Each structure stands twice: as C-alpha cells, then as structure tokens.
Length: 264
Ligand SMILES: CCCCCCCCCCCCC/C=C/[C@@H](O)[C@H](COP(=O)(O)O)NC(=O)CCCCCCCCCCCCCCC
Figure (spheres, rainbow, N blue to C red):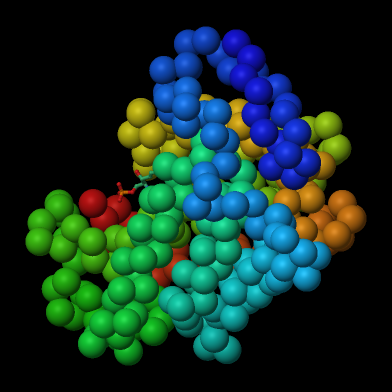
C-alpha cells in the first residue's frame, strides 16, 4: 500500500510504501492527511526571511551545543542542558510530521517531569544527574523493584531518555557513515532494534516501526538538520556521536553502580 507523505523539506508529496499488514497501527486517516500538526509549524516557514532565520532548527546549535554544555569539567551531567538537548531533538521530530506525534509527546512529557523537579523546592538536588541519583536514593524517592508511590521519579524518567540516547547515538552513527541512497528508515529501525526496542511493548515497537517508514529520504533529512552541505553534516555528526556516547557512558556507569538500569 502506498501513502503519500508530505516531504518535510520541500512541502511536496512523496510516496512511502507501507505494508498492508501494518496499516492498523497508523493513526486515523484525517490525522495522517494533516501530516504536520498546526501547533508545530515547520520551523523554517516564517513570514519573512529574517523570521525564517530566527526560527529555523539547527542541529548544531540546538542539540550539539546543549549536549556539549551538559558535561561539567568533572564529568557531571547538568540536567538542564541535557533536557534542552532533548527539546531540540523534539523540535526536529515535530517538523517531520504528526506520524511522530506519539513519540514526541512521550519525550516532551519526560523532559517536563525533569524540568518540574528542577523548578521545585528540591531543584538544587536536581542540578546534575549525579546529585539527583544521590538525593532520590538517600531519601528513598525511587521505586526500585516495582511501581509504587514514585512512578515518575527523576531516576526512572531520566533512564527512559538515557536508553533513547543510545538509540540516537547508533542512528546518527549510521547516518554519518551512510551513502546517499541508503534508507533512513532502515538505519533508524536497525538502531532501534539494537537499543530501545528491547525495553518497549509489542504495540510500541509496531507503532515505532510504522513511523520509521515516514522518515524523509537521506538528502532531505540532512537538510532538515540545517548544518550546511552533506559534508558539513557528516562533519557535525562526527562530533556529535562521540559526545553523545560520552554522556551515555557516564550515565550508564552511574546507573550500573547504583543498580538502577532496570527501574520499573
Ligand atoms: C527521527 C526518527 C525518530 C524516531 C524515534 C525513535 C525512537 C522510537 C521511540 C518510540 C517511543 C514511543 C513512545 C512511547 C514510549 C514509552 O512507552 C517509553 C517508555 O516510557 P514509560 O516507561 O514511561 O512507559 N518511552 C521511552 O522509551 C522514551 C522514548 C523517548 C523517545 C525520544 C525520541 C526523540 C527522537 C528525536 C529524534 C530526532 C532525530 C534527530 C536526528 C538528527
């Protein structure tokens, strides 16, 4: 079955092939037709060129810089910048259309939980991932074995983003080393199967698998990142991937040390 999908870059329609057996996981037709939610206009569409420049998403500025600033010289991870890196990614995701809405909604909800902790009276304890872990464990604010009275602790919320960070790093590495004709949907699916998928229910895995078919082709995806020529994109990805890996590894070791990698 072919569906026509709005190309997020050129606003033209491009065909995407969807297996018939998977159609039941798609959102209702009226949602599919409106491929970009009105509340999330494409970031590059403004009334004037100046507005376009101000509102355009930029991978380097909104993601790379945030993840760079989230590491302190002592290798502590600042939650505020970590969250801001995720928010940049959500902005990019929103620009790809409403097919990805259920993913961005979950990411927004998780970043919001962390921001709420940061703004609360306990805010200073949530400055870094390290201080958050210490504070929540010392004060028994984490459901360790099964869901209980703290279903939305900072530790379990950040763990979900942490697992997604592994997917992101694997996906970006595939993109970086890909050739022009390689399929973004395949790169995304392989990275997902190697990481996040094992933590997701069957329904989420099927829905995510369907959404991947809606990804723009590689050249269009590179343009959405807005960092310049394909060579420049590859260069930025070459800086982003090791950085994301470092943030991932620091969190992974911390969570491992405290037995937090399987929080319900
Ligand atoms: C560009 C393609 C984007 C594909 C995204 C691939 C990841 C697929 C994730 C599917 C998540 C589906 C939503 C629901 C998830 C939750 O069930 C699940 C468990 O939470 P719970 O324990 O509270 O129930 N949540 C999670 O695992 C957290 C998922 C967070 C996903 C954030 C993804 C943001 C993606 C941003 C992509 C931007 C691409 C950038 C390329 C330069």
